[in-house]
Amino acid sequence: MLPQYIQQTIQAFDQSADTHARQAAKINMAPQRELFIKYLKGQSILDIGCGAGRDVAWFSEQGYHVTGIDLSEKLICKAKVCAPQAVFMNIDMRKVKFPDNTFDGVWACASLLHLKKAEVAAALQDWERVLKEEGVLFVGVREGAGEVMEDGKWYANYSAEELAKYIKKAGFKILEKAAVTKWVNIYARKL
Picture 1: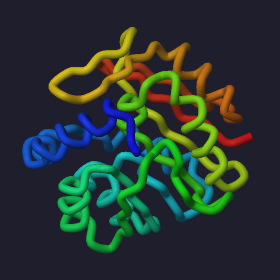
Picture 2: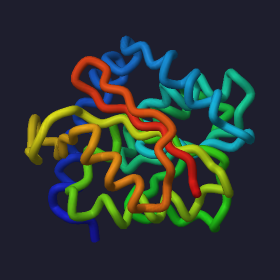
Picture 3: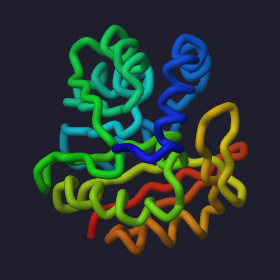
Picture 4: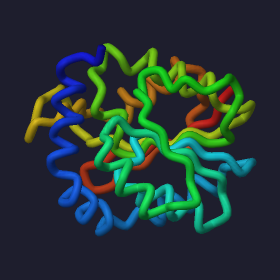
């Protein structure tokens, strides 16, 4: 059974799936995606919290084998239309249920922030587990402090230092940190 805050967040995304997909499509993630693939040493990517499939579609168009996971059924439906060549699954990001050493990269853009900070360490350790040796992790979260339910969705905000601490503790080496217009983006490699 999912915690209440996650159920509420899923419900809010399901109710706003069309709006969310339109807004996400307007955001230029090209610089972040290009830097991510620069660090990537293989072809398989897990997009955690893939939403309507914006990034899955881009990675797929570049020739990568992409699996997108999300708990919003309505967003997964949109993602399947956006990136029909990719694989999509309705899976909880806290426990991703793939074999060890499956993916070359994990892309988590605006998804980790929907977990309570008390659950982040375990989730990151699970993401580290499914990455191959020297696999690459990208995490993008809102910059700030505290945790809040906003418009029916759970948000945990981070400073670059706080997020880096969680990522290092999960078994990663920080490759690069960037604060971009109220967002913190961290690229890391599995040790």
